[in-house]
Image 1 (cartoon, rainbow, N blue to C red):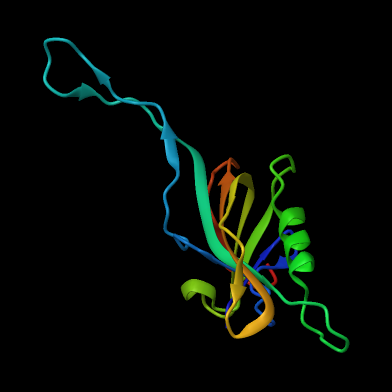
Image 2: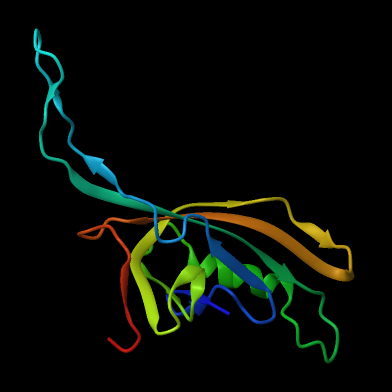
Length: 160
């Protein structure tokens, strides 16, 4: 199974307490700065330079947690939420989002890395988990933004 990490924290935990996926994979194109210039009385436009400006990387996922019972090794909802809030504050410097292990079509010997910061975090209403009376679930949407030069994924062989 492929893996996705942000700031070194697993976004696809084995216990499914935190699970995120890339909405656009690695194919999204950055927005650009610059535009072509219309010349009055002349058909078309004068082509001017454009430069890649920023790339928005949307993630969609959930957090899941359970009640506290003696001997229960599953994370509580509060633990899952604390990890999430610590990962995606709006005021932190960029961190590395890394995909590996065959995630989203990567070869098993490749990693894809992009330096991003949090642009937006939207949490849906917390809901109970029907199959687990003490469990709670919340859908999450996160928009990350890359402003590196160039704003793009770096796909490299593992260990490079």
